[in-house]
Image (cartoon, rainbow, N blue to C red):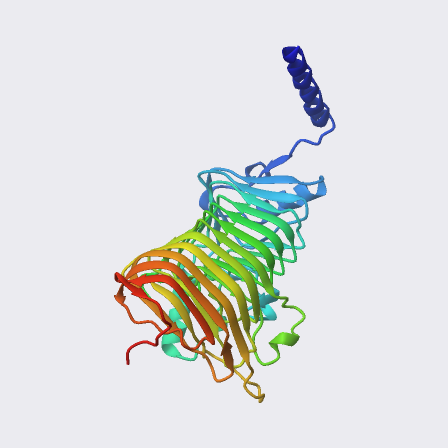
Length: 429
């Protein structure tokens, strides 16, 4: 009897699948090579790739496929219903000609201005999937060299003084999945998420040189910038970049709280990731206003700071409910906690210095070998409410610590260099 029921179920499933195929509901694949793209690494394929995306959208959606080969391209623009799959051995390589990235209104560094488009651009593209075992190659070395050349001539050169394209910019979108992709040598930020919700970034690699400056260092090569977004999950990813690994961003300046284009970063989840080079596992970035409910678990760092909170003297900031658990430090210079003023290019615009708040910070189950616990410092208007350090057993080059800026500091089962620490005493002078 059981065998007959199983056969009936299998037959019914087969009938459903056959009906779906007959109805044309099976996923449609559109290979860029069928539309004239050439994977020789030198032919510019922007028009062919965009034509493939446009046809896919016009015919009801599907997946645009980048097969094995190196496909050079300028900026391309995703459409609703169109996914992108970069197959193993496939490379979407960015052009080194800045004119292949048109300008348009863009959210960048906490405000909107005309800025170069990214290699991949998506706006109001719900349910977007970018998947595969292939690579997005920003081909960014000329942009890095131009930046350092300009800065050598003028020390006041800022990030936005030199036009450089990002690898991927996704905005105003929900239910987005980015999986399996290697982000390589971006000219600027690798993956910028702005005003997005329910995004999953899974099993991706973010890499850019972070060696000697300027010979082998990619400036502003952030791994992932979560900007004014909610419900973001980053899991099983690895990072080796020349700037922040994962940065939470928003607005900046004395009127930042009034910026309706920058809702809070909320419910950010970072799990099972490794961090080799970069600024920090998680940084509340140079532009961040409201950040809350951040959960980081089961991560390992061999260089980047565990938690880095930047405090701007010109911006009212609120960082709260940030929890890190089961973190392994495995590098001689790893810092566990860095909370400090960030004074680069700040502007009070004639206003009085604002107030900021840092509260409910929890670090637990941290183990390994590193450089120091770190430091806590703020601006004159910064209030530190509470921090908890629990189940920490580390060997550090510098055993000093100072969390005395917090009104309430709870230390529970904290061991530094074999010695139990029970009180939030300040560092030695």
